[in-house]
Length: 388
Image (cartoon, rainbow, N blue to C red; front, side):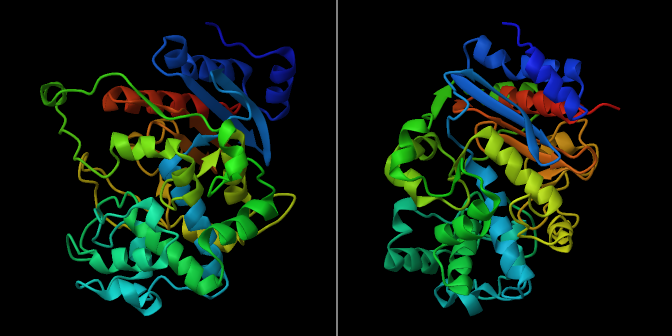
């Protein structure tokens, strides 16, 4: 199927000094897996100068369809916490146990707040059942049972959800509001991001596209033939992903991976992270945003690819030429920042061009190499859409 811009879309693309041919190449590549019958749906948006320039929907997706953005939620949770740093209500060097005493068990008392954001806190595999969140006794019992896998601050290992549960708890204790209410009242509502939800309200469930798994998983031999290690098993299992098809789990607003949004809403959120806000509100100072993008993970590398982790305050920074291993395109600038999500969700902004970009799909490809290659290809095309 050919994906061409209408005359009206082309005029708007040119209005924001984007290249029509490059945008059409992006649309064509982003629709390929849906056209081929692999993915059931997809949705993308590109924004610049504080406005959505273009949104495109494929397959069963409508422009107002909501899709779970999974770990791209981490940027939303983190950006809410930045407000506490900005107000002097929180500091990276504070000990988590001084804020959440229930967390201090099993040698976790010396973990710092900053280590939670940089995935250097030492408890990457700590289990938590999302439906326990709204029962504080169960919540605190979970925190107390967690143990360390390695000494905090000694290495980087992705904390798929554990550290964000604690960040959400810190937000509650320091703000006096529930985590969901704080994100809504301090970030979503001031910026008027109507199609972004952390904790999906029951009436919005019909708009949410169900997650589905597609394709076949690669065998260990196939990974070996490509010279790659088999990815380690994590808590991001098929059953965990599919649980987000239930209204009860959607309503929790899992802080490390449970937001629902349209592609347009995510691009506008990232425009706000580029500029400190939008025409409606300016929650963050530019100093806060620039500091949030400062890499905290030093020379630490990831376990799978042995590439620099480049973790900032809840964000991933593009950095050097190995940026495609961190979820960016090969053509992003070193300053690009974002946080992608399970299933191939792509969400980033690039200060070099002023572009923010989002690609979402409810289809989770079991072939991780194919999924990763798709993301690099789509991001690479999106990153060069600005006219030279």
